Image (cartoon, rainbow, N blue to C red):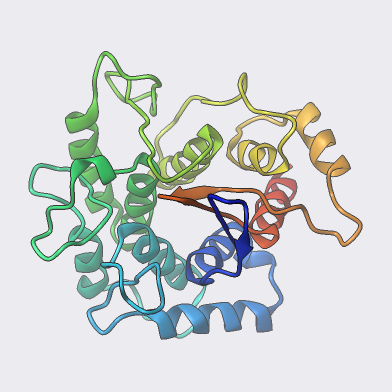
Length: 266
């Protein structure tokens, strides 16, 4: 669902939400539902091998949709062969020669640095790790060296020599940063500290679910709140999760998927 600046809401393209739900709870979905979701992802892949946020293709291919869709297919598509060079090339296309991991694949491959997003970076490296973990660790090390700064706000990894400025122009909550990096660093076999255990809002089911899914220890207060916030339908309410100029995006399905993922862990 998309909420426009004036507060109106409209149905939105389902590609990105579908990929993220598969990554969160794909193992728990009924086989028919999982197959339908994977079919949607396969049908939305462009002839160039990338995915686009909008079905009409008015936006350039983007790293977030491509990484999340490819990761979901690699994890769950029963007919997908082992990751190959074609898939790896689709991901490294978003790596700038400097080591930046760009969000938008423009005609000359030089999207403005202001569009770089730390959550998108995590998702790209995660998908890379499913293809080739050695390559993923290499690109992570390059990106980390480029972005490490003593003025950064948070430490993203216990192996990082400096703090990292966790800039996310697209994602709304700090919990989304921890959620993405927890998954990525676990896949890489790298330890990480908690970013949000002291600042998570217990007034938001979405934020609680993301924090619990990322956490290395159970947080009973958040678990209790998440249980109490479940609606009679069995779902959790839609909340804004990411944004673009003039609009925010989220859905009850996404919040519910993250909540179920959190409970399946704890």
